[in-house]
Every structure is written in C-alpha cells, then in structure tokens.
Amino acid sequence: MSAEETVPDVEVTTVGSRIAAVIVSEDYRRMLPSGVTVCELTLRNGFKVTASSREVNRERARQAAGVRAREIVGHLEDYLAMERSHRESLPYEDRVRAEHDEVMQRGAALAAFIDTSEVFPTLDGAEQERMRLQLDTMQRYAAILAKRIEAFSQ
Image (tube, rainbow, N blue to C red; front, side, top):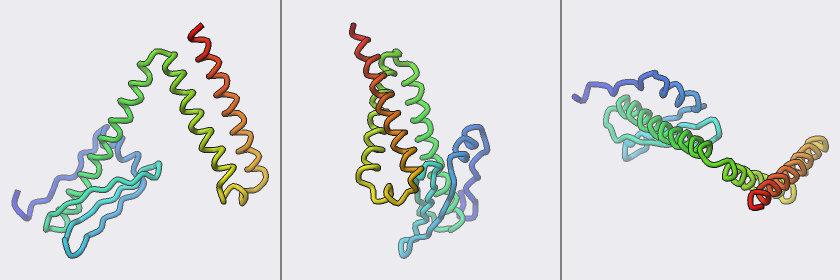
C-alpha cells in the first residue's frame, strides 16, 4: 500500500453487526510526542477495549486502530460464545453446580454492598428493602440448588 491509500472500512456483516451492537462509544487520541493513535471502545457493560496504530497518516492511523480494537471485541465475543456453548454442553449436574457457584458469588457481592458500601445508606428506604429482599431470595435459591447438588450423590 502506498502512503496515500486508506485502510478499508470494516465490512458490515453479521459479525460486524454483532460487534457494533456491543459498542456504546468510541474515542480516538493521538499521543504526543510518539504520534501513536489510540482507539478506545466502551462496551455495553462498561468494559473498555483499546488498540493503537503507529501509522504516520492520521486518518490511516485512526482507521487501523479502530479495526484492531474491533478485532479484539470480536475475539472477546467469540470467547463468550464458546463459554456459553461449553456451559450448555455440560451435564445438567455440572450446570446446577455452576449456577450455584454463580448465585453464591453474586449473593456475596450484594451482601458486601449492603453491609459495607457508602452508597447503600444513601438509597431510599424502598430501594434498600428491595435489595435486602433480593439478597434473601438469592440465599434461598442457593440453598435450593445446594439441596439439589446434595441429592446428586444419593
């Protein structure tokens, strides 16, 4: 490619649309004095993906960094799809164990938020009560899953 040619745009395909659907914002910065262009994509869940380009031409650098960042998002999305597929292929007993572990982790995080967060006391009373009810429900759900797991060995 000559210095005047541009990097082609990302093709709009099913994969491209899937990737675009998880991106909520896109920011480009030119770092001085290195001249490196950085693309930062913010995903729906708040996760940030960055990629860079050392191209001299600013537009080419911007395009290249954007393409690289989207490739990273694509790899992350592929990983998540494989993880979901793997979980779905597990015997149901293993899925129940994994669900129990996940409910326990989320319950512990919510309990920690309720017990130690500086934000929780600032919430209105109705929201605090809903969160306590959510925690109680999660704990009961985890207990039911634990009983199911225990029954697997009987």
